[in-house]
Length: 192
Image (cartoon, rainbow, N blue to C red; front, side):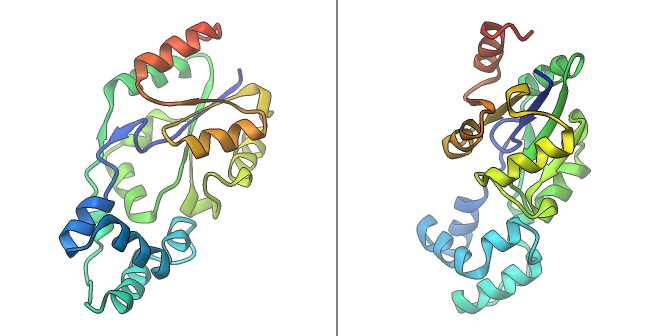
């Protein structure tokens, strides 16, 4: 192995899922909120084509009520998972370890301000590179940037679709459930 790619939300940090709190704040079901969010440009927000301000302006039109604050930032309360941080720090003594994350600018800034990305050698954020998981191009972009081959790379994510997409291009991948299980999996592969 030469390169490890880690997801951030659900792997490095808890408290990153904001859909339910925002939906509840707006008096919507999760499904209703996501339907409006898709129409308002959620994907475009995640690949950096529009800003959070533009997103909420679009969302307000569909919602019928003006949203003036960035609720993405307001409800975002990430907390580091110490066991994952320790595991990444151990891996970094022998390997290059980067983040590969679907995110938006306001979440990226909060993570940065709180020092969450400091554990990584580099961060590949969807809103900055214009690509997002599970697109194969997302992984290929990282591999090219890191001069790594798929078979030299290990990917960790808590979303099965992302893990499956990485596996399709021969990146060894693991669906994350806990740092302890990840450590056991790596040990079984001879990676300490």
